Image (cartoon, rainbow, N blue to C red; front, side, top):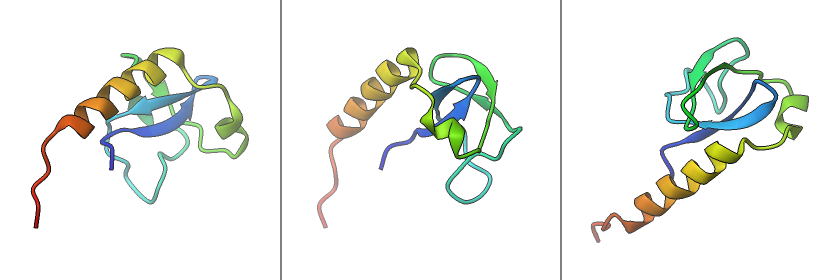
Length: 76
């Protein structure tokens, strides 16, 4: 539904607009651009999903989500 995806990296869960190469996650070791304007290396381990969310990515993700909700939808 939203154009961003969450990715654990650099000790936090970040949000990214980068395309995921496979499945539902960014693979460990993949360089990912984040909504907080960083480039981080993804960590696809189960433990990494327990990290705290990056505050800047969280704020930017809310802004992006709100913008998506405001786009008029075509009815079918």
